[in-house]
Length: 452
Length: 187
Image (cartoon, rainbow over all chains, first blue to last red):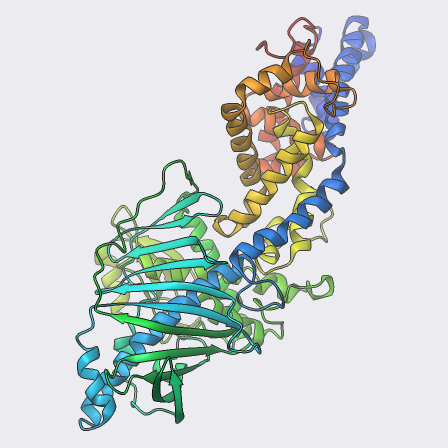
């Protein structure tokens, strides 16, 4: 055997750790044993790589102090998204997302109200609510103040305050304020790219166009099934100088896909348009909408671009394989713990489905409790990542006009039926079947599958 | 980069962090802070600054965690953030850093690395390796030569990881034997 090259000498050292090619290593070791040059070379390489190892040992420097410092800095980051204090849906990163969804739900609530009025108009054309419907039917835009109140807190202790803008046929903007300063702007434009600007950290993210959003508009379809009767009348109260009578209704009566919750509305007796809306979500809090301005000019609402010098933090696109894997994992966990069924909804709301899954698996609420060590069970490990999968479905439904989820009619035993599908950039459709098989198919093939 | 199999994996820790568990993020820090420090060493030789950069990287990661599409890829993802921090640092502080790197500069008031010259020299040579080799070397030596963990973060097979490590070590060995090729001179 010839003398060994540096690569071969390195192999002898690295091989000890990696343990590959044992035959070659034995032969090389045998050579080194009898060759003084290679023996010296090996010692030299060992010394060189020892230097590399020792240099890396430096990276342990002040680890514990750095860890404490980093963790101590996290609350201030969390605070930018949420109010401090007890854990609820307004907290942390998840809080920001859920908050966002609650804001959307709140806006949806407004349109629910409009829809209610429309339904009631046909049911009882001489009612005061029916008169309001006429005015609401003409609404093309509105702006209102939105505030969040923690569960159990006094309604006067608003935690986050913002302004919500909506314009037909389904574009919206949300401005979030902290201590009187504008800190975040989210713009979603129907059919066009949107934008999220973080003024506090001077960053922005571009968003895909909204096609099938958490949209208020979408709720009109659900309203057709709604009986149009409030659960109870609310006593008269004064709202900014106007005495108004209100009503209350369970949110899931209007759209069963949504959270459990209660909607309360106080319409203006003169204009018949809502003066104040409250949306209660159990264990989470209350969203309050007031200071409405109806049919206002929208030309300055959606045109903002990213401010100069702000950093672009737009995440890269996820691969279809990644998305499919996350979706399948979530649906599999759900079926396992929820009587062999997938979420029986038309529009997937990640936090709603995840809460149902956690409840079925006997786990604490996924959003309200940070798991302690003893809670990190196999069930938790299985259910926790499901939130991501449900969120992926929701995102696809909102941004992909050709997405459809059939959890209401398709279960794990419907192995060849389409459970979820969406259109890919190449014109093919990604399909997940009832048995959670996934396949990319042509539009024609999809039609055949959906006839089954 | 804890190799105890009974501990939650990165994906689980990411999910727990998103669920509000800050200690889970502390565990991610335990796993990856050393690697991040090795990467940001390219931005400064000042120990305090390196800690600051490391903290910055983790706080950015925390802020952007909800955008991480594949939680099990937290390792490569945070390395990407660290590299961005280094690039930004070089762009915005080029003049200042040039002074820092001047071996004749007198900065006694600045906290310096222990054994700074040797550590800096070696890690700077590592930083000049091609990206994948550099990451492989950092991971390998920061995980007590755990090839499996290295392969996992690199998303490569064991044999593929081995080939990269072998190539990188051979390159480093050659560079380390050329003392005149110090910092600032690309071997």
